[in-house]
Amino acid sequence: MTRSRRILVAGGAGLIGQHLCRRLLDDGHSVLCLDNFFTSHERNVEEFLRHPRFELLRRDVTESIQLDVDETYNLACPASPVHYQHNPIQTLQTSIDGSLNLLRNALRTNTPVLQASTSEVYGDPDVSPQNETYLGRVNPIGPRACYDEGKRCAETLFFDFHRMHRLPIRVARIFNTYGPGQHPHDGRVVSNFILQALENGDITIYGDGSQTRSFCYVTDLADALVRLMENPANVAGPVNLGNPEEISIRNLAEKIVSLTGSASKIVHCPLPADDPRQRRPDIALAEKILNWRPTTPLEEGLMKTIDYFRRLDLSLYPPPA
Ligand code: NAD
Ligand code: UDP
Image 1 (cartoon, protein in one colour):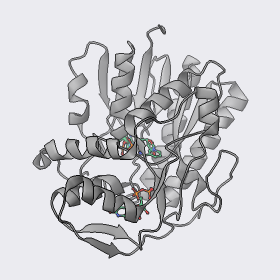
Image 2 (spheres, helix red, strand yellow; image 1 turned 45 degrees about the vertical axis):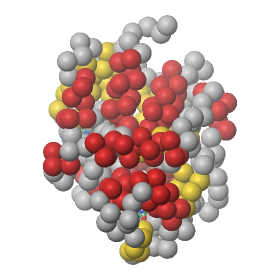
Image 3 (cartoon, protein in one colour; image 1 turned 120 degrees about the horizontal axis):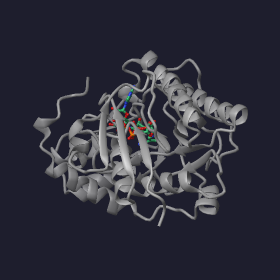
């Protein structure tokens, strides 16, 4: 049984954040969830509001932070291309200023801090699968750069705090993660395809659909984050976290149409600039140091997510700010 700790989860109301909060509460910890609800909704954490060990702080991570906690997870950042490109300067500030604020607070309290980094640091990779030694192929001036370069800079900040101040850090490079709790207007591929299929609307494949992704179910990912934070050898990372099962976007669309029994037709839309052609994590390091690999097969995770969206009252979710 681990000691009960007070844990700050910045971005705790988002897709991954809400599952992480639930997991940490179930493990007996106190959770301080900080969020500005830019890409989420207070409803995502409603079930925790009466929990005696849960606190909610409506706050922007770019504002300076003084909070006495034992651990910090930094998940605060829009993750969907539609939302992170909405105000690219704000996205960069969220990654960079937000990381600086949380790192300074962690330094003040000398407590570990974990950064939710991303497979986007590898850009449009020319190797597959991607392992942690691959330095990436990112376009620094394209429309995705505000997210990719913001996350790369955040990794730099984390490692410089580690080298200069011996601050205990963890850097997780998260690959595409999906599941219940995603905002219906999120705009990422899994929620788009499921909602389109449930409404028998057109399934919008960007490009020819031959590009690949590898999708990890959200509770598997939350488990990996906790294992990384708690790893006894204090490995800082970066560590790839994701599901190595790769699928083309076309096959994903067909699978979702079939699982929902939908009458939807597939239509093709323009491929966004710099959209990575392929993405598959090499998770050998996570398997070795965290004794972790995802356990939820894609179809099972998709069925749970479809069930979530089937039950969701969409009228309660206006498009995000
Ligand atoms: P999400 O958009 O559902 O959640 C992000 C949360 O951060 C939201 O609740 C949002 O309101 C909050 N937020 C955004 N800007 C903020 C700010 N300035 N101050 C405070 N809160 C802010 O996304 P997610 O999928 O849950 O992703 C969580 C983290 O994991 C992000 O940092 C993302 O970059 C990273 N990540 C996610 C994936 C994925 O596929 N889900 C992949 C790689 C990395
Ligand atoms: N995509 C798509 N249709 C959609 C949304 C996304 O074909 O309605 C494609 C997108 O072009 C990309 C892949 O699905 O190739 C994954 O997109 P997502 O926005 O989920 O995340 P990314 O991995 O690109 O950050």
